[in-house]
Length: 215
Image 1: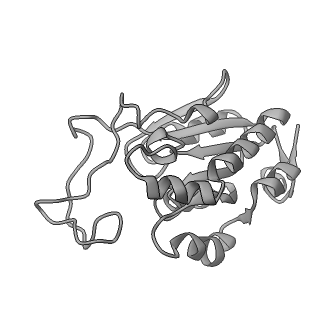
Image 2: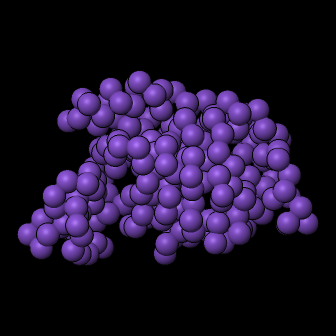
């Protein structure tokens, strides 16, 4: 039966979970980055995520919020050598390693109010890119009988990709919502949407996903 349900094109409430990845103020309402604010507004990212969330709530699909919850003192992070920083600029050296941008307890680490959880939703604190790594996300899906996830958020080439790879290896059905995901790094978003995710699941818009949602 599990295999059959994953082959059902409909997104029924009994077996589907909506995943709003890092839907945080720091990413969706950056106070110190007007270029990012403009980027998100031009693509209607927040409005599309609201459409998606509204559709899920209308039919009773459970919503999950994997959210960065890094310790302010850095005790749950490690420094490592990388060729660049997160924006593909010089960085990642011993004196300037990549570190989490937002920390637990800050305004930036709070879920954006337009997408705020309601009773029955599940917030998944995480300390790494993948929603599954050393969290209880897989347990929360399994106990609800969920075998398919609909994922939205950013960045596409970081946490979304990491979570989708893990979901694929855990045998979940996957829907990536293209107009609810984003990356500000060149053509990375298009690359994943066009060349990577279609081999792992289905890629569609928020309106298309909502049209497939059923009680």
